[in-house]
Image (cartoon, rainbow, N blue to C red):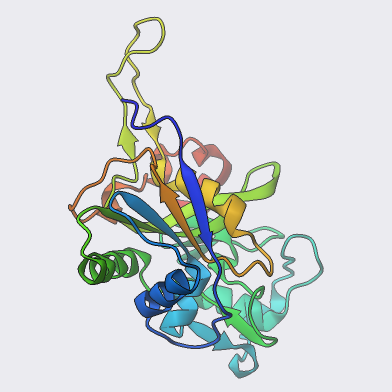
Length: 264
């Protein structure tokens, strides 16, 4: 199904956030200052780091005492030199599993990501930003608040981060949680150009929107943690998403041969 022929991405500039705050209020204030209005059928993309900071999910690195396990790991993040044992300790605490190797690749909230999503960029010196406490709940709560305050009927919200791809330079977007739209579109059974039925294809709508928004959101000092995707090719819904139905068991993942000894 063709939902639209074009999509508009509208970044929203904000002030720098350095402490806990009501996320909806922060967004509405920025939107008013930028003279932008949220419309029915818009999809709001939000930086996970902003969500985490607004929740107070940050750590003062000076308070971390590295364990013996953290000290003995010879780990480098992105090949920039040996990692601070305190950060290694934080990763060990946050991760569901850490993949053995020279890089800190970890399983966190069902996603494989560097350093369990812990970030030192866009944070004051000595502060580490964790992932949001629950991206799915945060997306649902923000959407509900905005629907009520702005009297909207149809709205999507996605909380996103950046991720690396195997054997490729550069980051792309990943949706950590969403609400108000179908983040995965199952196209199995549809016909291809030659009339053959698609057997396995599912479109990662939320992740693709995350990557598109990341292009205008930026990764440095842009201070654009909100992006409105207008006329996005997404199917809106009021049904609460089930994160368990979105993830693939490691044994069924296309890359399982690469890491099955460490994740299964």
